[in-house]
Image (cartoon, rainbow, N blue to C red; front, side, top):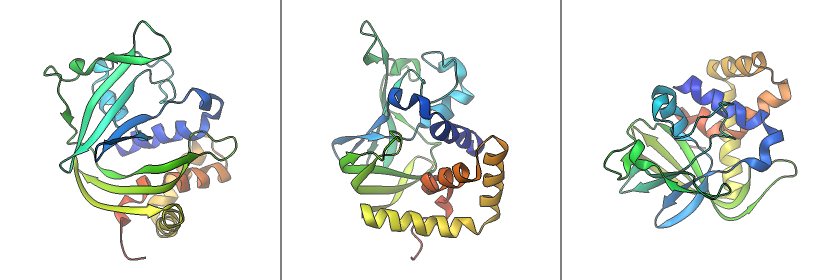
Length: 213
């Protein structure tokens, strides 16, 4: 599963030509809904391709043709709904949750593991990069088998320091070298590979989550 996520994240980095078409998922946290840039259902559809609601011809998350809505409720991670396009081709407003769950109720995603973040406050983008926005504040949370454990809230500067810390620790591991070589093998330049790992360092370095800085 981890290798599959690597492929998914690679597409985020190399598909710059399709940035304007990218639509994030959504996540509900403490009653508020936020953009969310982790695509947990792609992992699910890899193992259950017959349940994918709309064919994904180019196999990238840029054109996955659905929008998932997640929720953290009572410290558990759920899929609240999944939408596809209906009569209006510009809007994903038709629920197909019943195709994944016959009860048409939120699904507890017991297979989710990792370290993820939610941006809070004003959203802004670095020039020519609509896939990696920056925010005033962040929620960083750890998930183990669908259960949310440690949670931290960071300002933008604190979040950057935390990423720098995670990257510094991760860079000294064998796992970093294997990942780096894998990205180079798949066509990234040295700069693109290191930038990609830093951008998604929370996912890759989750084993180091919230150790003393």
